[in-house]
Image (cartoon, rainbow, N blue to C red; front, side, top):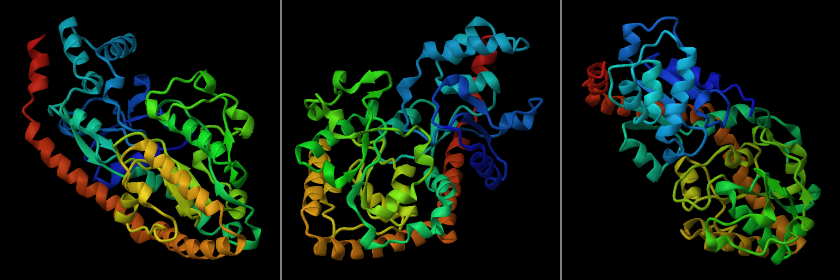
Length: 403
């Protein structure tokens, strides 16, 4: 996605008093090692830079430590060596760096005095974070999607087309469903359930036959609980026409004609709490929503001050740890809402939109946005304090001994 995220990272650099060396992936959503670059590379490597904490920004996508093998790191360093002819590393030193995961790439680029590196992330309740922290990283939690979404959806705060008119609502549910591969495979089961419960006529949605080079009918489910007969599923839905840029925008025409968005988050069959702009888009647009995410995600939103819809929408689905049972609970509640008569729906919508208006106002308030940045600074300060315990130059001394 072509999004100027360097503005965000320059902002973090500035509010942290420029006390960091920041590395980030240069394309939004990229995980390619070749795209991991220093935010502000200096013409020379000053000693003061060698003593600054280094922070890798992995806040856009879920953490996945095992994605990068020693061989991957070696291949990237070898490619970099062809460019950096002035760097004089012997084979023993390169072998050592390759065992350090992403830290090896950073140390190859700019060898510093600290034995650990900060990893900026946007997830809670994360075993992946623990793996990182067990292998030379110190986590810094930052809900960066909150700041990014406020930028992407800023016009929603004043968009006149988002003013609700219940007489204009034509469908119960809006469902954006662009991709279904990888961690999103639950979406295939969800779409199948919509058909089984004859809910598709109550929804505005679409479906992609192909994703990541695979046709949906040949997909092999990683979680057997989601396995369903996928034959002819695409015949029940319009073909998807959205690309990867879609989540960086909103469609006021959709929101003006549809009552409730059912948000299909990136992570569903997982234990981690990781909410993205997908969740914040209906909030920014003043739209009620049902959240297809990991269990506890609604409580995550409430912890940030948002109100959810319990009592109007049965939100017990959010407490269900088993992903298939959670999916079935959402479908059951959608069926209940779809079965209401017009008068009952009108009454429901009126109450839901009162809550949504509160959430929209909170989201765009300077107080709330400031609280997100303050949370980052608090977490950064704590993590730098932990990092200070690992300035023994063990890595630097090890590399020097291999000269």
